[in-house]
Image 1 (cartoon, helix red, strand yellow):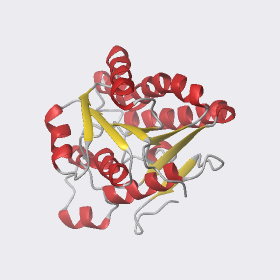
Image 2: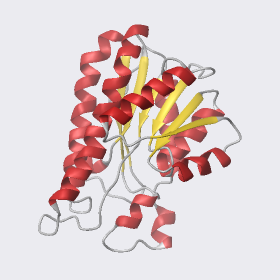
Image 3: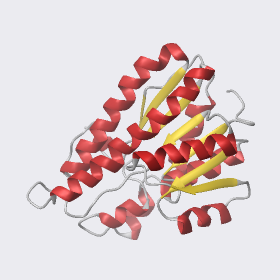
Image 4: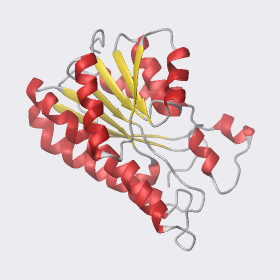
Length: 242
């Protein structure tokens, strides 16, 4: 595997959960890392928990102008981005079609799907210029299996994110740009707090942990330029994939 020493990485949704753990892992492996999220206090907590320097900037990935500002800032402070991790994502408690508020449908599509599009659109020009770059999209098994647990809007948003990643990955492969969708099953992150039925501590301990996804992301971004991983599924040992 290639070294990450001196590589630059920008991680959205970096204030908690999977994004925060990927940030700590990449920083520990030599990357110069910046994280973004909507709440500065959470970003500061990640910085305080890491032994390596991590830069922060608030950003709402659903706001295209805000995203443009994020990438302008990142280029100024990090230089050209080598690795983009799209980890920003949300879900809601009222998920069934009969309960779903149209405003919540819009919010999930804007953050989970359009947010990833906004970030990919901003980073591609500098990656094309270098003829190199890795984009990792943290999707969900809900993006390949439309089960009831994720809910209508979340499933739709993750299917859209997956299609976006696969299509751009095919388009940009000739430019040396590699895109990966990682599809986690259940993961112990704050998004579980939005479950309609509370999740027990015992269940949280049995499912995937953020560090498991960070290990997968590290593997993907450490591969040499000749290797591309379009899709990667990771589920808890006890979770069914049928």
